[in-house]
Structure formats: structure tokens, C-alpha cells
Length: 202
Image (cartoon, rainbow, N blue to C red; front, side, top):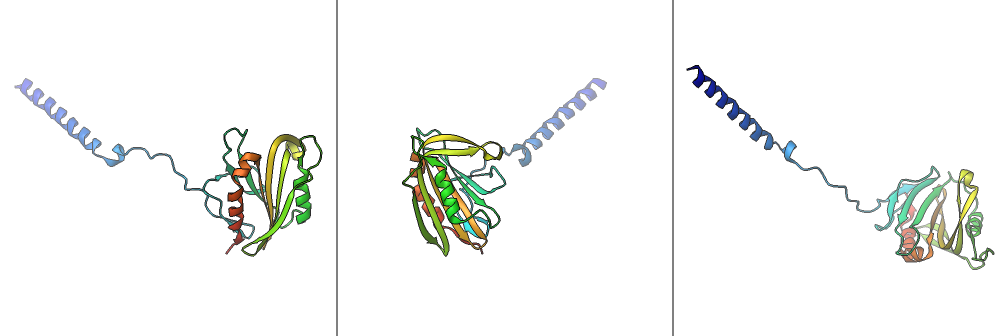
């Protein structure tokens, strides 16, 4: 009699365990798969220093590498180029020197392959939605500032810079695209399209 009772009790335990296991398997919180990696839809429109701008979808938005940068984008390098191009947006609280001083400084960061100053930079002016722009286009060996107080430079051959001073409502904002010349050549059209999106922030 006792043996039949124990056998019945054991069967009940097995049945209850099976029921509990089945219920756990039906719990959506336990069966739902982990979410996949987030997919970026491209850089979102940005507002800074009284300006609004929108980067092309092929540009990769990055966290600015210094407090002087309002925004930073990486432009993927073409095959064969040593690195990607980069566009940085700078704002110095309405300061930063005159337009001409910045044009001269940007041109001075380049030299010819023999070390002589470049003599054929292109400087142009235009308007983007009421924002005056001064645009610099310079090619050659780029002497990139780096290190403490930016006192050191690294020479990078066959580079190109497209840079612009935008005279916005809160003072000048600076847009500087640098990289291997073939890559910057490839993104020249999208850089000009990017400048066309500049407008006063609402």
C-alpha cells in the first residue's frame, strides 16, 4: 500500500515538473531573441553656433576628438589611399581670427613636394541660404599639426584640403575637410552639397 502511494506521489511530481517547464518555454520574455545591432540611417541634421547643417548619408558621424570641434565626420577612403578623409567643424565662440587670416593659415599648412610654398591655391566666395562662405581648395604635402599644443607636424604627401569659413549669425564657423587627394576628389561634390545645407538655425 505504501509502495503504491509513493509511486503515485512520484508520478505527480514528474507531471508537475513537466507542466512548469512547458509554461516557461511559452514565456515571450524567455524565448525572444536578443536584438540585433542598431542600423544607422546616416548623420542626423545638426545645429551649432547659430547654424543648421546636414551631412550626406555616406559620411560617418563621430564623437568630436577635441572640445574645439562642434562635429566630426569620417569619409571612407578609396581603395589604395592610406587613410580616410575627415571633416571637422570648429567654432571659437565668435572668435577665431579674420577670414583672410584663416585662409592664409590653411594654405600655409601645405607645401609643394620639394618643400616650397604652394602657389596655386584656389579661394572662392559664394552664399548659402544667406550665409556668406569663403572656400579654400589647396593640394600638396599636408603638414598636419599634432602633439602637445599642436607643436609638431606630420608631413602627408598627395593630400588635399577643402575648407570653408561660414559667417553665421553667431560669428564664424569653420569647416575643414582633409584627406588623401583621390578620396577628397571623390567627395568634392558631396562637400559642396553639404555647404548648400547651411542655414540660420531656427
